[in-house]
Image (cartoon, rainbow, N blue to C red; front, side):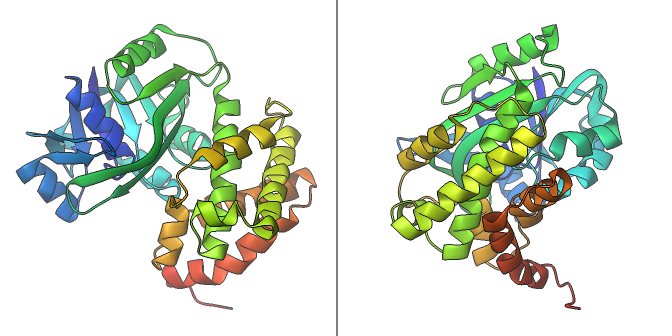
Length: 312
């Protein structure tokens, strides 16, 4: 299959590199020093067990030079989705799928608002990875996983083709989601809680999941998000909180979430799309979300500073 990775950072770059390693035609849409490094030295992926290089690697900062592809893997940050959607028109043909891998629950509606529902499918991934310098992605933990599906949850020929392509990529477990909306929210429960607690405590997951005081905050945050999901008619199982906790307990203790790392580094983050989204959707449903509200409001001044926004 022919892929374009729009946003070839720690997440999009990793999955695109695995597909390229499997022999698929992959173009990385990147910019700056990262783009230059990929064009000149290829894309290097360092895993806990070994490393590999995609070289030569096709990369550009101009989607118009690529042409229509079978699948666009969208790896930009959540707040960049609409801008990316407006820039990817030349990549989209009659059968193109746009696979968003953002944290949060707003990527699909943002994409459909710009592109219409036709090309957009739902997607979710799990991986702990960082951009370890221009042209270098480091996989730190969590078995790489991607799930996807049509927005109406039917298994179409194009979804089957995509599943077959992922099946050829080593180092990645792929799944056609039975209910893609539930899958997106299942990750949202974990990542928003992890990101929020990590950012507010400035601690890796091994610390705040172990201290009784912060673990109780974590459990409360998870329960709030589950309640918001259920209020929005998302079909999550009742054991979602305990299952998510069990998964979080299995993550390497030194791991941090990308939102947490951005906030701690003074960069713009996905705060509004994670804990802020919990607060917003809770208010719309008439539900109180006190822990997520505390996290969101406490981190908001830092987010505003990172975005050079003026205080009232």
